[in-house]
Image (cartoon, rainbow, N blue to C red; front, side, top):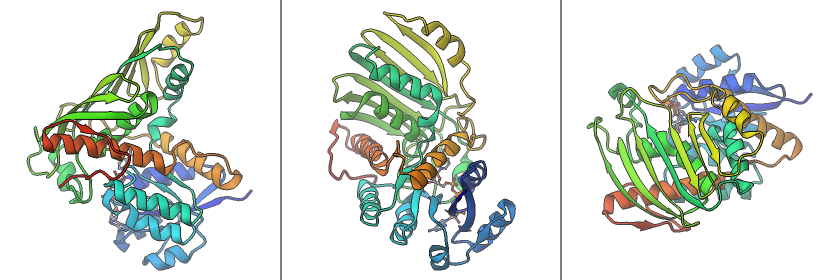
Length: 355
Ligand SMILES: NC(=O)c1ccc[n+]([C@@H]2O[C@H](COP(=O)([O-])OP(=O)(O)OC[C@H]3O[C@@H](n4cnc5c(N)ncnc54)[C@H](O)[C@@H]3O)[C@@H](O)[C@H]2O)c1
């Protein structure tokens, strides 16, 4: 059986999840890693039994067929564009980049070089997320009324001081929303469609030393006329699993972590009772709300399986690069509104991000 040879660029915290997820795939192998700090790449290669390259050129010239991008967010395009030009398929960590322009440049270079680009949104691969999406597509909620999400997470001051890029506009692209809340913002778009306009407030409730927000709230008007609230924080002790709450004229659902804790419709069907019983347990995929570790690698494994199958068999990607750009457009508009103090419409073109 042909195994897709993977490389990892950036061998920090999340790279360990990538390596473990690749190890669990039958039709893939971790071939080589690269980090701009060669000592980190060497130690990582020893731990995960693969090669490491001390320089980027040698890494790109190797037999690697696909790379995962695990560098600080503002270095994603810088790492991924040369890889795309060298013909490597790409799984890029979230956020795909820190500005809409940089996200667009990456998407375009991948298309020009005919390589696949998927952006990590491992939450999309949870079974209960798929179940909710199907209920929406089946029209079970009736007319959408409210779509809201809450990410009341906690990070210690050391989380920011241990890696200098975190909490900066240039390399993190934002704070609690761009880094931690982005998965849930993506779910709001996935479930309820595009946003028309936002009005936001942001502040630093705990982490005074960072440039970006640690707490943010946005009210949202969706293009389908429904409304919602998106709140994200890394200052809320002790940190709770994220919540997504969807309500329509015919039904409502609440997702907490990856558990469905409410599932109620005006017109119930025979499976609803079973869904309430089984789906309340979830799959244990959600972690990271109280500290950055404890993330399961299962979501990444499913997404990497999809990319591997797409490389080997031409199967479609469910989270292409354009999905990564869509959520950056939303987040940048929320930041623009918080900065300006007035509502901002989402443009489909370039929106400024940070300052
Ligand atoms: N999907 C998730 O749930 C999840 C969770 C955590 C982090 N992330 C994302 O993963 C990315 C990395 O986060 P992290 O916490 O692992 O960071 P980290 O600081 O722990 O590791 C980053 C690594 O990249 C290396 N590096 C920096 N610039 C580089 C470059 N230009 N080329 C090659 N290597 C370079 C650093 O030396 C370091 O080893 C971020 O984009 C973050 O948002 C995603």
